[in-house]
Amino acid sequence: MKRVIIYCQEQENVGYIIKKLREYVKKKNWELAGRTVEACNSSDGLFEILNKLNEFDAILIYNRENILDEFNRQLLSGLATEGQIEIIEYRNQQQRDEM
Image (cartoon, rainbow, N blue to C red; front, side):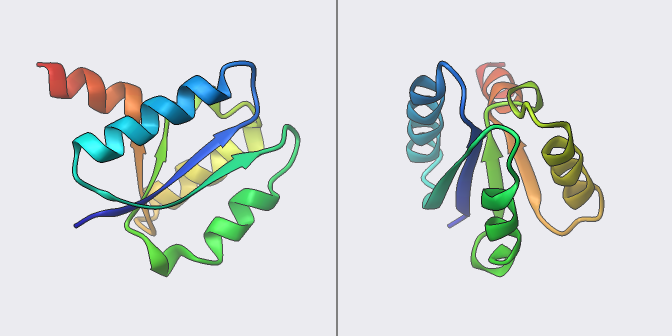
């Protein structure tokens, strides 16, 4: 079973985003290992996730555009590019699942 952690940044619709991501985790029969809602202009939550990379298989985000902080977006992209962790974008996966 895939273990995932939800990551998003504070924004107006964060409750809706978390709800959708939790529903998706349940639909895919994955194990939810936790969630982090990052304050704007902060990377503390993301650094906590980085310290626990061995505890889960993937980081689930709504989509890259919802990561408002450029540094955090680039850090996530770098982790995925280096193969350190899988970054799953809900919006892209949802569209593929519907095909």
